[in-house]
Length: 108
Image (cartoon, rainbow, N blue to C red; front, side, top):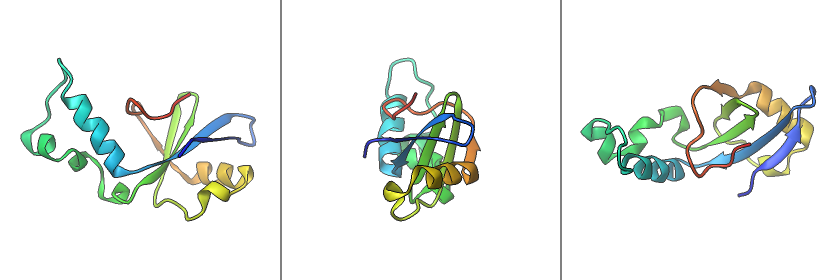
């Protein structure tokens, strides 16, 4: 699914998209197989989803604005049909995250 864009009450442009653990696992596996990549413990190499917390196993909405990233789980049913104002409210309640967005995922 393509990212949706909306503006919050401060006029900041956000992108939001759905993330599935399977897509994260593929990206983590590809990243760990790149030459020069740090190699995690053997358990994590066998199961890339070991790095996905239990709360996120069902997927999440990723929100991105400039350098700010947030996650919302579980994924609200029918989020794609929500108004921009409703998406802005979800972004407010989403959990801020540190770190970068995995390669291959939408970003600003």
